[in-house]
Length: 470
Image 1 (tube, rainbow, N blue to C red):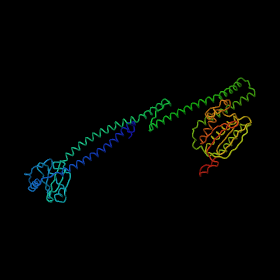
Image 2 (cartoon, helix red, strand yellow):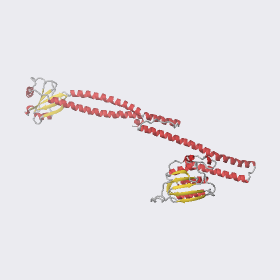
Image 3 (cartoon, rainbow, N blue to C red):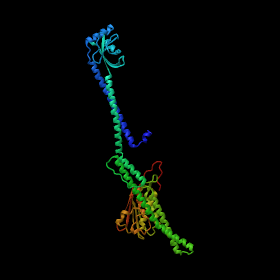
Image 4 (cartoon, rainbow, N blue to C red):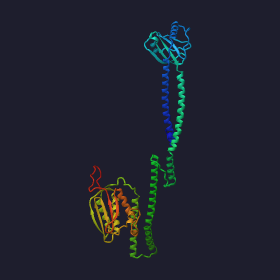
């Protein structure tokens, strides 16, 4: 079995095909052999029943049997052996023929207990004979046995055996060749797929595509391979773009940090003190740049996580409480702005830290574009979170790009931020089974709308399960 499994697939298919055909041919040949033999035996028996022994010839054999001599009995006609079986068990065989031992069935016919006996036995010279014994004129004194050698049937069956063996052998060889041809033809798409996979493995070229024609399993496999390589190529492109964009976004704060630190270091080395006001501005700039770097690093870590929800991290979350916490955090850095709230209870299943981060990003975005002493309207009604600002709004041609990674509006490039906030919002809301859109608000500004599936009341507690964390 191990050696068989070690063979190539096409060789195994050819061997299995040849083995299956061999079993079928063997079964058909055996059945044919037995059917022909039975048919020939029936015809042989019919020929024995059609043999009529002359009454005079019977009388001569009986006389010779009684007298103990066969001098005046002529040989039996044709290839038949004629023999007299007496009721007492004595037999008299025609001259020139080997005697045939009388069987109990023959004696029963001679005694009138049976009408006929038909059996196979061997003569004294060892030749296998087919014997028919019958009783003439129902006299119950003797029976006549007519026998014929089975060599005719054996010769025919021997010829048939070799013919069937030759045909079976040719059939098996032909089946093996056909199986090998079918295996090679049928596995050509698999060979192309194998070559493509090996090419991808060696060259990392994900642009390879396999022609997929038809709707069979091979075509489905080819289409699946093409879809997989396309997805891998897209993922690699996104990763490369993410790295390039991250490097670009990191360069600016790092350059600023380096410049400010070099100014501080040069001041220490030369002994020239920086004016107190400039020093405070410099330190404030360093703090802002460090904060921006930390935020950008956290955003990149968030985006590096798998798209699906993490097992064991989702829980029933009171969305209204999370929104309240996010509002409290944003108010600390949004002095001068007015927040109006209409928050009603709503429970969702999500990752609480990620959900809070997403809400903070949306609120920060509204704060960033709100005018001084402006108003930010926040509501949560029936699972729909709405955050509306009264800023300049987003041009219609830029709305399709707001959730792309590192995308920033040309009018907002001077403002702090990495362009990842709304991308993280869309990712988090999507994990929770919801959706988020940005639409222009009537009278100016932008409205962010987040829809999350849930219920206004928490689900019933399951016995043994931990209670939802507030």
